[in-house]
Length: 406
Ligand SMILES: Cc1cc2nc3c(=O)[nH]c(=O)nc-3n(C[C@H](O)[C@H](O)[C@H](O)COP(=O)(O)OP(=O)(O)OC[C@H]3O[C@@H](n4cnc5c(N)ncnc54)[C@H](O)[C@@H]3O)c2cc1C
Image 1: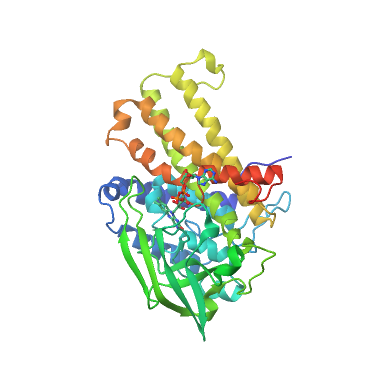
Image 2 (image 1 turned 30 degrees about the vertical axis):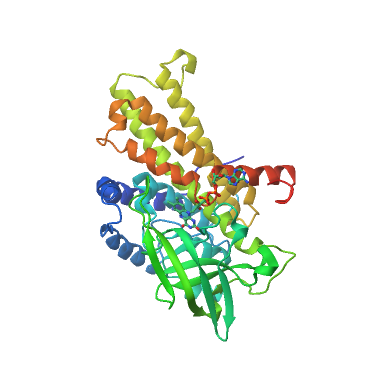
């Protein structure tokens, strides 16, 4: 029998993240939406807390730092299933995004690059990069969705890699202490030569060209980075430096198996926030949401609410499955993409529909609904757009290669 209850340990850590979200994030949510690019100093206190907690060996509060498939995995007592780093990171990301997803993306030491490191690093590298705040730089001016089109180069020169290229739209690209950069070690060999490199913030030749102004997640800094003869140590390449043409770029792509469920969790967190707000508004307006009466006999707004809540539940369960598979060492590329597609779509649908059903107050800045409508859109874009996730799902289901189905 499937047991959908969260184990006690995970419930406790999710509750802790929820407290952070409601007591630290929500009160400052509007402030940093209006003050784009202002550094959320309140998060420094949180970083100290996170540090203290991980030093003491208790649960991490938040973010995407988990995801190591061989993390020490607490087992549930029923079926000996593992619930490790992916599951706890997913729940924490969900809860903190319920508070504010822009702030969640700005939590020190919890960047998407951390999940990338966890997915691909050797044990020695994991030890060395265990306490960094890593952003992730894949996108370039010449491409976004087609991650095989990387033009940034990495050339080995003695004991150092020399990187050259431009990376755009890097989340936490200014604030993070390290950046995981995708670059080609030999452009003649195509996608198989794309590797990821950990670039420290103070590496010579690395600079921030500018920050982007955006529709939403304004608390999060999105940077353009320049790598101009940027030198990093030889052993900062993640995974093997060998180019295996047979294997393609499966190595770096593995990152997405961990990060996509995490982004799905962010969308699910924002979705839940909007549903809770909408429920309160509808209840105030005297509209009853019933689980006993057929939807066609209920108020139209209540029927919409129930439809959206069902989407929320399915997005949540798909994300849990993807993370659970990662923790249990099961290949999960299909499920990771399914969960991100469903959650990304649900996030934008539910937040904007909630604005609509709330009427003028939903559109005003008196509530956070309009902000969530803006914030949620990015979750259906980065780490692979809606269309790209559907393409991946179609390829997997139909057994087609990327050359056969574009
Ligand atoms: C706020 C923000 C933060 C970001 N953070 C990061 C980050 O931290 N690191 C990073 O590397 N990148 C980041 N990105 C970049 C993001 O990942 C890309 O924007 C995304 O991958 C889409 O790429 P693109 O913008 O070039 O769009 P394109 O690839 O040009 O796509 C444009 C449209 O065409 C669709 N499309 C493309 N190919 C196909 C296809 N084969 N079939 C059907 N439809 C298709 C897409 O779905 C999209 O709707 C960020 C972007 C933003 C806006």
